[in-house]
Image (cartoon, rainbow, N blue to C red; front, top):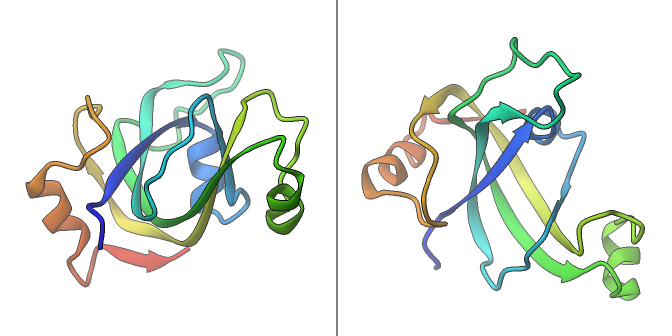
Length: 132
């Protein structure tokens, strides 16, 4: 089993993942990681015109399983996962088993993709995840 990792996502997109309204996250880079992925809502907003002050920022807000990461021009995988090949970012990260945390875990923005040990332990407690 691979080590859990972070994915930093700006609001409001991070909350769309928590609400199970977005199961494919786009990225400028792909990854070979498969398994647990902590969704970290970054401190900044994606768009200055959106008021996201009511949404959590600077915290891990969900845990998901990263099932796949592929290039947007891989039409077979895009068809299978209902991706949009016209997305601006070149890579699609396919998320499954998305679970909102009952209480977001506030922490500094991660500097690498790996979750620090003390946070990884908190993510595995029975009270940490609830079905979104």
